[in-house]
Amino acid sequence: MSTLDARTLPVGAHLSADVVVIGTGPSGMTVARELADTGRDILLLEGGSLDVDAELQDTLKGDAHSQRAEPLEKARQKGLGGASHQWGGRTAPFSPLDFEARPGLGIPEPWSFSRQDLEPYYRRAAQALDLRRYEWDAATALPGDPEHLLGRGQDIVEDTGLWRFSPPVRFGDVYRRELDHRANLRLLHHANVVRLVAEERADAGDAEVTQVVAASAPGRTFTVTGRIVVVAAGGLESARLLLHSEVGTAHDQVGRNYMIHPIAEVGELQLSDPHSADTATRYVKSHDGVWVRRLLTLTERVRREQDLLHMGYAIWYEDPMDPSHGDPLLSAYVLARKALIQLDGFKSAGMHRRFAAAGGTAQHVRNVALGAPQLAAFAYTWARDRWADPRTLPAFTRRSKQGRYRIRFDAEQSPSPENRVTLSRDERDAFGVPRLHVAHRVGDTDRENYHRSLTLLAEGFARSGFGTYTPPSLDHLLSLELTDATHQMGLVRTGTRPETSVVDPDLRVWGTRNLYISSTGVFPTASHAGPTMTAVAVATRLADHLRRRLVAGTGAVIDHTRPRREEGPAS
Image (tube, rainbow, N blue to C red):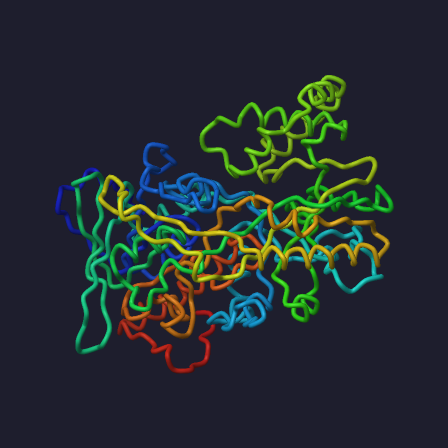
């Protein structure tokens, strides 16, 4: 793979390729990797540098005051590898129910392809993410650990699941080396795509992207053409590019149905036996050497019968801001958060505001002083598992001697057309592209749904005898500032009708012949699981479709407004 700095191109330069991929994060790099052996000319465009350069992030800024979330430029990364620079490595596939229509939740249509259709691509994604074995239950991944965390006395909670953790794979570092020997791949960095030019084809009734307009610096524009153009710039930037280019916008679907994963640690869990969940409260290595963590969800039957959004639960350490826990590490954590609150770029802004307001500083200092030997022991194991181990320990955990914990949840947000991004009327970046304006909130209906789920979780704990969980009150959930996981779903969703979606089942933008989107933005629903693994699976599926188009050489596309059978994986 040859690498070129776009700043060396003359103004007005023109490049061409068979496939142009805009973005080098997990989705874009996956499409390029999967197509590398076709021998076709593939050009990757990256707006950042070969690393993450803070000075280049300004184009990502936008107005997101309505959601009180992480500033938009902190939730994304420009640079080779894209969002994988921020990725923590946590993975789990979506469940079959996540792909179905759920009218009771305001989800009238299923995904445009099924969970079964995506299964072979999930397996290939697991390989790309270095997850080793494709195992998602405790019985196989953790021999000797109880298969059922809660025992068999209840049928409300699915208690055999796992999160698996990638090292994590940084796509720029890992796969640039793999692709370097591919002569048919080119990487152009400092290539900021500012607009797509699409021309209507009167004879065919659709449009074709004839130019990708990019710039290496303000005023230094150049153009790129490709038989196929894949936008893999993340959910927010992909929507922004389509809106600014006025491509795919005929039915006013671009930028709507913006979904995140709301996160919080809530309630009080008292275990019946403080030692009964030792491995469930921390990260452990599976039999094949991968960090895993026990995952709880409500069963699919319960979620289906009760019209519940999908929530993933983990047993979490006590509230660190309450110094009565007496734990020196939790107190050190609080003091560090308070000290770092003014640093720019820290993730989860709302959480940091809460730490800044935490009291009990004197008691926290006392906990740290009295627990100095424990902190020293922790520092050793942390350095060993977090920095010396090539598979990075995902985060720190604490075991409560008294068996007192909270529940951490990652929640599905329901799609709503009113949660959307639009182009700012007043603000533009240095390249003249309007910045994004975000209108987004987690509504009361979703919060009430979360409360019902947490109440059922408590019932499952009680029936099993595992412990007593006191969930937060509904009033607390309605007012709680939920942490934004900074995931970007729904903005350019896939579907079977252009009136309700942006891309068709092949991820081709409706009304275009050669424009595709590959990002978390194509997800029509969010599940509870982090989106990276599913994004890589979806990108792999897209690459198989593009391979068929390239090999056929006809450029033929399929009319998805008519029913058809799903195409299987390419051989």
